[in-house]
Length: 158
Image (cartoon, rainbow, N blue to C red; front, side, top):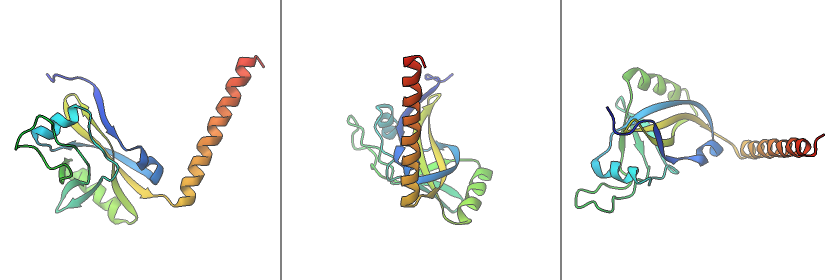
């Protein structure tokens, strides 16, 4: 029986949803060393520059920053090392076919603990152009204004 039940989010990559069209998401296990787990349990990580790739049939995540554990000794980890992602072979093959079709990349969306185990939500994404980003922001603002107008109408009793 795991010590922790449920899901505890450690880090999210909010910028990814702004910069990419998210096509599909996968839950991956994360192979970590002891001090990385302890640093993550403190809630410290940054996914901003992170990305993943498939090398020789294995999934690797790179450029994700997990800071050194403060009470760690000489056994501390490198902050931006390559970390292996744990997926079934069929999922890796499915992802590699989608990636090689062209224009897609693998972006980590969040790191979290699920029932005591470190997981990564990985997305197959396509980069947005500047005009797509402006369009998305405009839609969000329009939606927010419409909700404000509806709320003010309800409060006035109309």
